[in-house]
Image 1: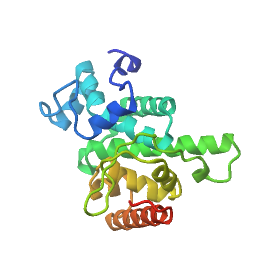
Image 2: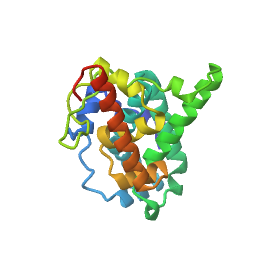
Image 3: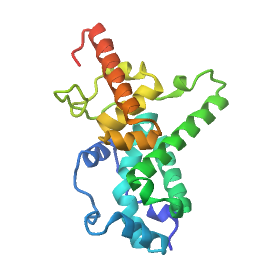
Length: 221
C-alpha cells in the first residue's frame, strides 16, 4: 500500500477550489455514488489503495475547509488535515456505523485535533485563553443569506470577519458547521457531543450576536 503522503493529492490549489467543492462542485474522483460508505470502508480496511484514495477524495476537501476556516492559515490547515487522515488511517477499524455516519465521525475527529492544536499553541505562547488564538476565517470565504438568516453565499467582508472573531469558540464552531459546512442539526449534535436542542440554541445565539454586531457597525447582515 502506498504511503499516506502519496495519497495527499486531492489538496486544492486554493481556498476557492475548496469553496466550490463544498457547495457541490464536481469532484475529480466520481464514485461517491458507486460504493456504499460501509463497503468503501471495508475495502480500505482490506488494504485497497483505490478505496482509500476515494475516501480521501470524498471527505478530504470538507476536512481541509473546516481546518482552513478555523485556522485562517492554509499551511496549518494542510498540516492538520494531513494529521486527521493519518489518524483516520490508524483508527479506521474503530469506526462503528451504528454510532453515526462517517461524516460525523471524521468531523468529530477533526474538531478534536483542532482543539488539541490550539491548546498546544496556547501553552507555547503562554496565552491565558483558547479564544485568543482562534484564528480568522479565510478572507474570501463564500456565504449567502437565506430567508432564515443563515449565512450561505456571498463573500465575507472584513467587517463580517471581525464580527465572527467576537463570537465565542462554541458559537463560532456551531455557525461554521451549520451555515458554512451545511451539516444537519443531528450531525452537529453528534460531532460536538451535545444535545440537538443545544445546537439550535447556540446557532440562534450566534446568528443574533453576529447580527447585533453588524448592525452596530451599520452593516446589514
